[in-house]
Length: 434
Image 1 (tube, helix red, strand yellow):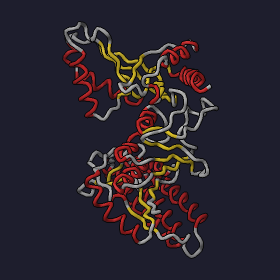
Image 2 (image 1 turned 180 degrees about the vertical axis):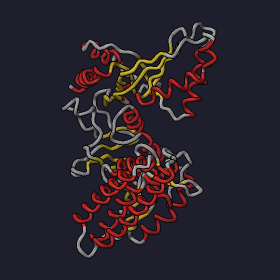
Image 3 (image 1 turned 45 degrees about the vertical axis):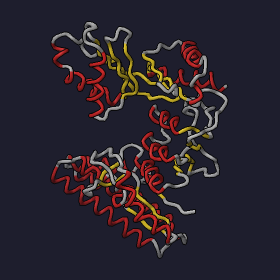
Image 4 (image 1 turned 180 degrees about the horizontal axis):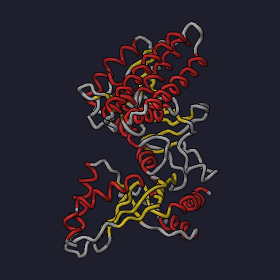
């Protein structure tokens, strides 16, 4: 079978590069030099461990070239003191360039013909730097023109993950889960049979094993279950990475690179049912409830909702879920903790006239919450699931701040004090998996 490999950076390298360019933007030359030395030393360890004496010099030179490019960029930033999103998207993918060069060389040394591919040459995105979206129609001919000839030659293309480029050739990054997204984007445009995501866990679990030691590996989950799990805190694969393969109905396997003999989890369009309506319980541990209340019913929630979601969508803010009072004069938004101040400031700017004249009350914020999500496609039409969930929560004497159920009945989400989240997860997991 033909194989295309997409690689991420070595562990911790992207964070080091980020710290390096931030230090450069502050003019901290000594810090920049120190971090660059750490990056070089980390890759030298890999080269020394993986390559024989005849091949090591060549890959060492390739790695050195990329590190010099990062050095030159950082020391230009030291002079400019202006770190823009565009420059950040040039710097951050250098970790993937380093690891892809090394991986391609390892394959060559082992007798497998390969070719290093910089994803900026084949993956076309929009210009939302730092969180770019792929343009599949523009990407497809570039990928076909580069990848298929290599496969025909019997070579394994080794592609840098996490990045792409605009139609004008400006480098971009794909945001959280970017390397997984690169893999599924390429899988979709190449119409692959399967995509395998190699991680450090055995697959998708029914709960966080640090909280529920008896959490189970799920043999199969649906594409929509995977998206919901990721969106509500599961770290195995980012929800953006699922969508390209979902549209093409290409299965995605989540497997453990340290234990390749373990089957892992298959993400598919028609998964098995595991005998319980609930597949998994997950959590976002840092969340806030932002509430806006109208003084009377004349200022209807529809107007608030429309303006607010339009603004927050423009600002690329994720709303975990929303609640509305029965009188339709109040609206609550549950958001990630790191977005709280930005959302609050945006609402206060948007409704400054209404707030000043008392049409709307001041914005109320409740912090230190966790969002618990209970998920499973078999929940749809199942009787008593909500009752069992909240009976389990009530038995732990935990108060629920806000509740929402998706229109597809795929998930039930609710907010509780963050300090109570582990107890709640344990209680629900025990209810459905014992």
